[in-house]
Image (cartoon, rainbow over all chains, first blue to last red; front, side):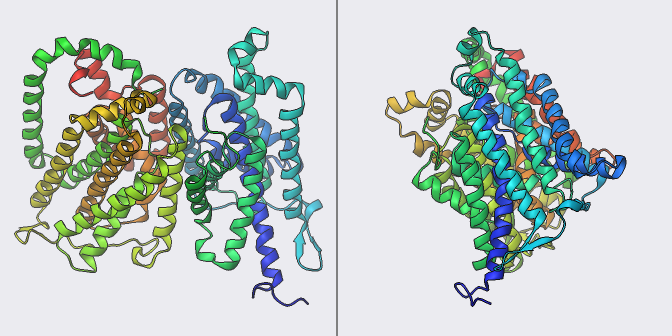
Length: 296
Length: 331
């Protein structure tokens, strides 16, 4: 076969890059949800990681308790997480909009502790395996590397979801309402649009994205109550790097940082855990508003 | 914009009438509290009390930033934990006496505070919280990987040693009074800071930063100094904790620890001097109690968080002060 690239066998390099792209897909899906929610509610949803975990767990419970398979879970699990989001927004979050934004962060932090603690209490900390669906078993030999079908599916699925969300927000009428309500909710309400309902649905959509990411992640990582808690902090760093201003920025930064993390695993594995945080520091030094952000 | 603007207007109106009786009442209260703190190890288990005092100082340090500077740090465990590691390492491996170990731990936290502070104050509000959280997660991964922290095991069996070459800290009472001394020094520094012109400028920045800038204050410097002071005092608490429990572990640097100190301060009352102490005592007591039951601790802690944010934002001390109408003494 080929020789080496920078002294690294190409198999290892592309393998890590693929892993990076997979991680990046989850960063992108999660930071997209965070950005959508923040744009409308001005709340940083600390419970995002817990709801991602919940999405994976709902899929696992449906499979093991009810015999409902992956494809139905891919539809139902985000719906269930989204409904849970509706309840959270209606009963708790909606009381805080007039207060300092930090209270939203504190409230969702408490919610994250409750959700994660409850699952941990019920199912322990060990991971539960979730089988890859039959249709996506096996893989493709691309000549320079072996691509497992499921991993390819995750990258494609997350790209499709991210791009359609971006189109829906930037190009459709509903998206226009949403952007208008982000800029000036009072005025939009005066035009006869039900802004509170729009806020609820936005939150539900954002957390449903987290739930969807959880289902996609279930066959790759094991389903465990703690799967979201460290991930959410990396996603926060991604959001700081990208800046919350733009949807596209959140998505691009997510994929980019995933790839960069993969590269770090090849060339300097010790730093792979912290590379995203180091990049955050560098970006804050050079462009405090984030790569795609606007200074307010 | 600030977390406190809701109550500050009313408080300042009542400042005048409260100031007549305020000082003596506060002085008597302080003396009673001091007497209680001196006597209490004869009634309660000293290790428990020392844990309360360490966390109380930690929460007070955190509160200096959020309560008086309006900056929510979600990464204070980084300072608490790093100091614990440095103190444990210097005392155990280098064989330094405990006072030097704690001092070095505090110095390490101060340095880390300068580093993190100068990065984090570039953004405000929610971003500040996320940046401090991310930075502290970096410290967590470093603590997991560096050789001297011993990964999952942490640094165990740290000798308590002999304070100033005189007091043997293996004696629980000597250890308790040492911790009390550390706490009182830390508390005095915070009290002095809050009541200094520097503290007044911090409050001005908290209430309205653009106006403070227009008055000619270089607000970034004030915020950085407050951040470093808060980080150092959190380190003082962490270093002392390492001596008391003879242990520095990954738990000290996790984001859950950062969240815990936020809860203590929120529950006790942000922006009050005594609130974090009350909050720390309650949370530590609660955790001790819950450890003996089968109730999941994070769920209970999470529920308290949610309840505090929804209906009890002033916290216990804030609520009491609001009722008594003497908030002016402390903020």
